[in-house]
Image (cartoon, rainbow, N blue to C red):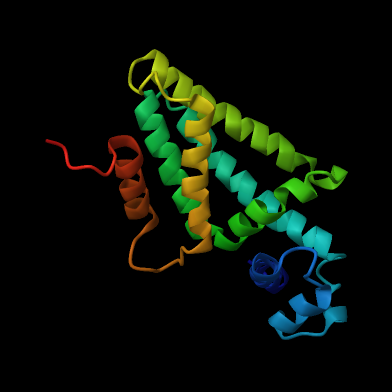
Amino acid sequence: MTAVPERRRELLDTAAEVFAAQGYNATTVRKIADAAGMLAGSLYYHFDSKESMVDEILSTFLDELWEGYDTVLAAGLGPRETIEALVTESFREIDRHRAAVAIYQKEARHLAAQPRFHYLADSQQKFEKAWLGTLERGVAARVFRDDLDIRLTYRFVRDTVWVAASWYRPGGQHSPDEIARQYLSMVLDGISVRH
């Protein structure tokens, strides 16, 4: 990697942290430049706007997420194994893109209204279809309970997983795979002792 792309990636990492902490609207190019230890004008050498920065942060995260999800969805796994693999892949993405996940959670609905960010709404629909389809397949196969509201179950699992970006820190006590295992145990098997 040459110096410019490497510096660009570092700047995007810094921008992602600022956006995640302060929100898109409250973040200025000056705040990002200050966090990066440079003058605001110098940041324009790499990016034409804060909109371009958040666009690259979110599109990079979603491209990687969908690469992993598409691999899982194409693997021909059973419904439970698909849910397990999607949750595990989600935690790996939180590990790789924690700040981008936080930005996505806070800003996607607002940003998706702008033509440049229409891909956010498209991704959300694709995400919902993948998860709901897997849950429906599991109910039909009698792998998941048929008394569950599928849409409510989807929202619970989605929100339970992605909110972890608010507290997860890479290199912490638990690896992404270990956290996924614990979450899956609670979601799929409950927290009560089996008698």
